[in-house]
Image (cartoon, rainbow, N blue to C red; front, side, top):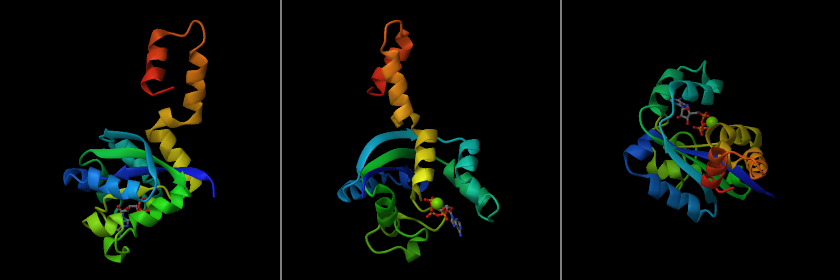
Length: 165
Ligand code: ATP
Ligand code: MG
């Protein structure tokens, strides 16, 4: 199995209870590596797009309100079989049904306020990473390689230095 990347969100119920470190300890103990991370407030439009697949579900409005109710931590995780591995350590959507020792079993409040998100497939992982942490994508890396050439603007060079390329 190849090294993969997946997208993780530490949701507002968890940041509100100071659980960022405790959740990331479980992620790191699993062997997954946090290779990018940012604490942000997402907009209503971002939340609606992110969970668009659930637009027709009765809980959609509540889900969007919850996701914008406080800060979240968006992260890229990397490792062997990262997408399935992270889903395993997150546990089932409903914490009451999650396996012992999983993030949701240990920390989640309820099926709605369930502390973490993880991508469910390779295509969603790639799209989610490109939406929330675009500086980690290979196209960002390639364009930074390009701007290093003669004549690149100072702001462009500074931006690339800031993101480590
Ligand atoms: P996520 O996509 O956040 O990683 P998931 O893939 O385990 O979670 P989904 O079925 O994609 O679960 O549901 C997306 C989110 O919608 C859940 O994480 C939860 O916050 C919310 N949700 C799902 N089912 C319900 C429900 N029956 N009642 C309330 N909220 C729900
Ligand atoms: Mg999902």
